[in-house]
Image (tube, rainbow, N blue to C red; front, side, top):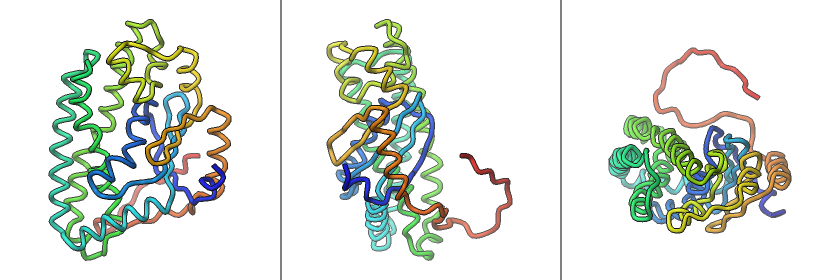
Length: 264
């Protein structure tokens, strides 16, 4: 991984997420984005420590993706409205499905129906979220409200999907006599396997993941890193992580006054 750690990486977000949802999203940064938008991220990296996740991507991948999407918008501004409608419609369907399956463990058919909407959501969200930083000021003024409306409307999918996976983990944990924290640390493939034959990895393996681990994605390959390797990898990429500046495009010109706190 020496070549990987020499890239410039960006820390994109941190928050309370399950390992299983990260294992779902990680490959879709490559697959879903390429399938829906024609370009995806070649690499991504996540740390998972007791339910808290930090997510990193190479700066080059992000800029290539954002510029390509922005170029498409500059050529065809109506693209924004089409993808805004898609993500809003997809949000409605996902929230409905998660409510429907919230009190049961999905069977294989139900799970594949859920994934029909869950997998491409990242591509729609990536377009809505990442494109704006690369648009011309004129296009941003023209389409900024459409981007903002779609993003705000679709954001609940992430918080609700985390609640959804945690509720399913509780149900599986009770049935199989596993801590629910352990169930939240299944990979996507292990989660799918449970739908078909109710097999689970050893509890010890899952709790090790819960306590401290990493997930590295290179195109369609997923690698689970143990605590020591994940920490070493994180130290290596944060040495060359892109600058501490905050920068981006402003959707609405004006002035805002608020408190600012540095959270270490």
